[in-house]
Image 1 (spheres, rainbow, N blue to C red):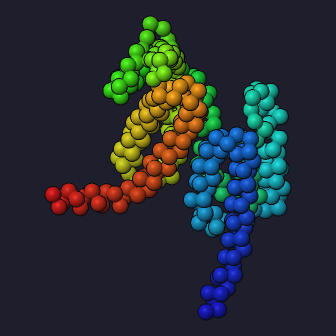
Image 2 (image 1 turned 30 degrees about the vertical axis):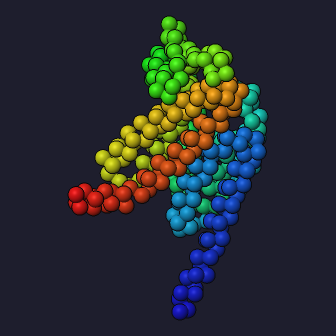
Image 3 (image 1 turned 120 degrees about the vertical axis):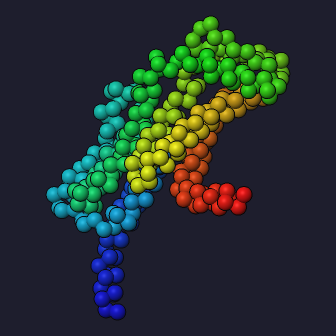
Length: 296
């Protein structure tokens, strides 16, 4: 009994230190939300990855004094990154994902010995890579933009099935999708490269790479879920754009603009949560499917 009590007392400081680390890791998410509410999504997923590493972090020793000082410099300096980035990106908010990545790096140095940085790789990679996906999207534009016409025709087909007589004019790029709204007003929309959903696909792929990197499952299982995830992400984008056009048709372009602003983030967040929940439950699902097949 005495040995158990001694063990509990030795673990308690580790637990308190790790809990403080998570509290300090969460606070900047509130700052990001205050500046850019929708920009908190990727950093929040990075935080969730940190939470999943809780047991491993509890077992890592505390950092030394010099490392604590270095980590404090990084954590405090993260709030001043804005002044370096604003010269390259004038519209950047004061505190966003880049600040958060440096801050988390600093916290790791403050709370854990240097070897713990391997546990920081996946969350930091997610935050940095996902927030730079807009640059990757711009690089891919010449390769993917010619396919906007094909996607525009698919959307016109879906709208026609829904009873909305729409047309796609693809003599130029980007193509134009047009239809007459319920109020009798002709709606002209330019189906731009960004409408394909390449940005959400890139963000999803980066998150997927991080998750699969951390997962010990076989490559067949991971490949199958990766394919399903990509197909689902592009299908979700078709649903998103269709919802915007349907809103334009029934309620006007102003209402469509509001839907255009919020629906992408809402659907993508729900899709991410659903997909990774299903992925986490894959063993249970496979067992249920096998039992159903055996019964048949």
